[in-house]
Image (cartoon, rainbow, N blue to C red; front, side, top):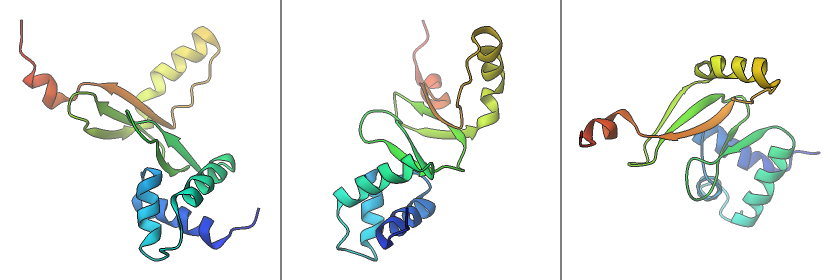
Length: 128
């Protein structure tokens, strides 16, 4: 596949933003090229993901968040306040090993979102 100007713009936007919804990518691209529309961005993200250059993660409800493939970490998403914290992929090593040993399952934990309650919200929770 050849790298069209639109594809390069979308990839460059993701490199700047690190994580972004298609709408955020479109806004970034339109800063320099206002004629690029959201449909082009969606199609380009799908193509780039198919080529293994980007990947998406669902950080909760709504549009997926895209990032460049090399950007490997785990997202900790608070379902109370919506805060997202990134932690190194290595925190999943023990679970990956357990799944491999017990089930023969190879977990791709290179870009993953885990939902729970952040430290701040957990401290605010009333105790019984």
